[in-house]
Image (cartoon, rainbow, N blue to C red; front, side, top):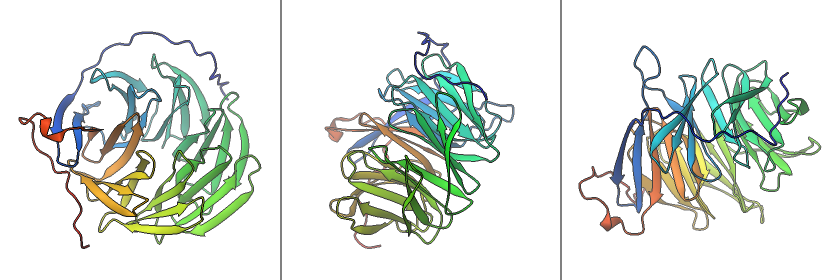
Length: 348
């Protein structure tokens, strides 16, 4: 086991510039504009990678992008260019997470390895862990000291980021685990997978605090809101399940024919979900309704990330879209290709 030290990282200023890819701006009528980033082929077959994992740096200046070509791409959001390519994985990268202090990036996936990278230089710092199963999802505690990991077995692992040792293991509700989330206080961990059950543990003791069948099919993603008001799950059964953590009240939101592939809070009471119908839906949890749709992807929206008023989406069309809110949509560039950001139909 390689010893991992997250404190006192040696940060190197400056990186080798990479090709910026194809980046174009588009305005839509929903009040959001997007810039499209097309990834370049990284291997001899000239196939651009399917992107299934995203993370935004805490300072909202970098976006980490990864998928089926085993490479982590780092996009500079301000300068609109690729800043780094991180090579070290040998198979599909399924999950990314920046440390809360922004100094490091953690990646994991089908090669069963969890790797730590210097966020500034792109240098691989260490192999945090080598597991005996595919790692589907990782999540860092708010202090950055503990990494939770799940995958294709019935074990939740909590790993010390300083030593790389396993602090605790807990039994999961099924062997195909996909979704994982820390509560804002860091006191709870929630996880879910193929059987539609959401299990919540005490993060300090490993005690099971609750378990509920929330969906009829596989749960793909779980998110706690940053203010601690909500826990939301998204499933292949085409629903979001919302729990009000203050009142205990639960309700569901239907996405029509779209399996929910990704989910992200975009502010208090505002959730974005990405689906198999290639759309991003924005939901107002207070009003319990869908308020708009963002269109442009031509494949399932497999990953979403949000930080600093920037929403990043990606998926099976091998593109990444960077969305920002517009104060005046009418003032946008009229020469850009129009994309639909339509209000949802009243009936479903």
